[in-house]
Image: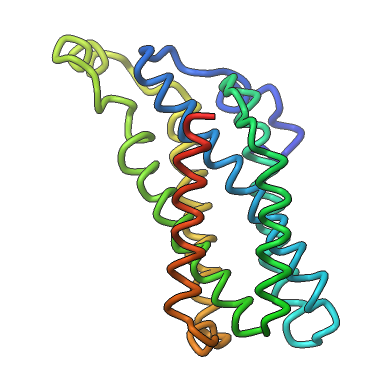
Length: 214
């Protein structure tokens, strides 16, 4: 719906629900991280393509995953505007760090590049899964009993809520598919795989916490 221009005036893609301040803060934090993550992912694949783009086997594989990330970012940018989310101030840092991470691991070899993808997509997939479980599900995790009773009496959810839930689930599944592709293409055969995965994964988790706040 976010990429179909004929649906641009649909309430699900151009309006936002009336939620509590606490829920607003939670939504703001989660979508800010998601948008920053998609920015970084795009630049990771850009860095990989810059180094491995001449490999006839890897080029179409990287391009396919990169194309999905481009779609993710397009949708996240629209969600950021729709829900009036304050973008992270670290967007430029995400671009530089993402490109550097993609290029450096690609220079270490195709296995290291795939190990980078495996580690990054593991963390991003976990974040999307957490969003689906704790943020998207009816926005009622922090409601009082009276608020819950009031919500139960409403005829239906705001139309953006089920759409947002589906977007998060779809993107989570895409990221986990990228993880599987990386493993299938020898990610775990990278030199010092465990160390590389730990360092990249830890960096991603630190970035998530920073983007939640900045």
